[in-house]
Amino acid sequence: MSQPRYITPEGEQKLREELHYLWKVKRPEVTQAVREAAALGDRSENAEYIYGKKQLREIDRRVRYLSKRLEEVQVVDRLPDDPSRVFFGAWVTLEDEDGNERRYRIVGPDELDLDKGYISVNSPMARALLKRTVDDEVVVRTPQGEQVYWISAIDYTPPASR
Image 1 (cartoon, rainbow, N blue to C red):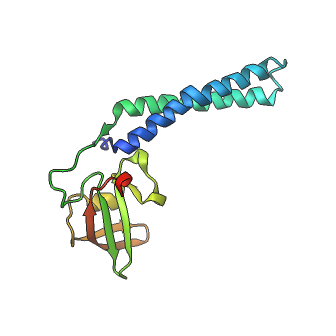
Image 2 (cartoon, helix red, strand yellow):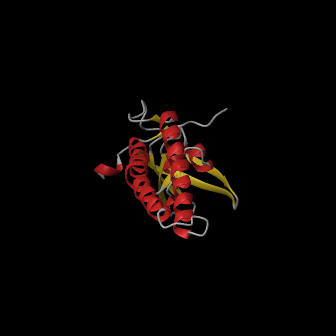
Image 3 (tube, rainbow, N blue to C red):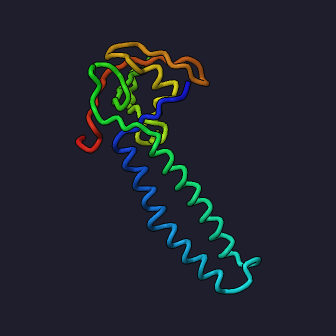
């Protein structure tokens, strides 16, 4: 079974912006730097030329990945039929046994950013939360053992309007 290839509209936009930057800005800059380094003569000992060629390979690899990925992903840009349950794109507030609250958003694997509270839909935490409702108890298996949480809030407010 393959993993879902969902992405939020914000996540898709971010990938498209990265692709545009790499292809239209960064690659031409590096190509010009390689051209200038090549004009200096002996390429075998020219660190700028060698590094530039390595950068171009890395850029091209990322461009290929992003292009392919953007063809594969499915943008989820509508609210679920039942917004009282946890689905892709939901902001979920959890309370642990000590009363500490944490807030997470379930996003696609390309959008993972723990600093923003974004967790992948494929993560153990997200899988445990899916289809649950407020006040449900959720048990998440972690490397440190089982963690118990209670869902205290679910909302689908986009971050831009917060």
